Length: 147
Image (cartoon, rainbow, N blue to C red; front, top):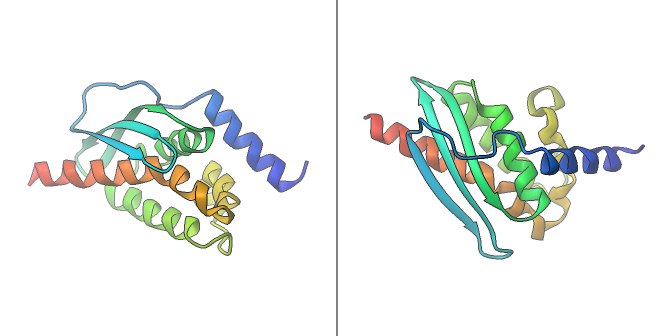
């Protein structure tokens, strides 16, 4: 199995077995994001536990890339300090905007490394970023509510 096939398998596994899918309580903020170019929709909830992402849950409709990316994103940010979760968002965005030129650190990105190949297809980048953009938005809103 080559690397591209492995990445496709990771994406399909997360699409079939979505981690953290289903809206849960308690939550601090709920956001709704839509990718107008393809119709993917996502409702996402974030619960902060102090300066830590305590929980992320979501309900999504859309392609395998957007749903798998959201599943993987939730795995990565839950339990991390908010600053680190936001830094992961920024790093993932940079990889997605690199047109396949950047390879993320596998130890840091875990299954999200599977999306490095998606960056080569500009039409699919928005799909991969949908959940990441939503979680950033929700975290920032939750922080603003606390102030």
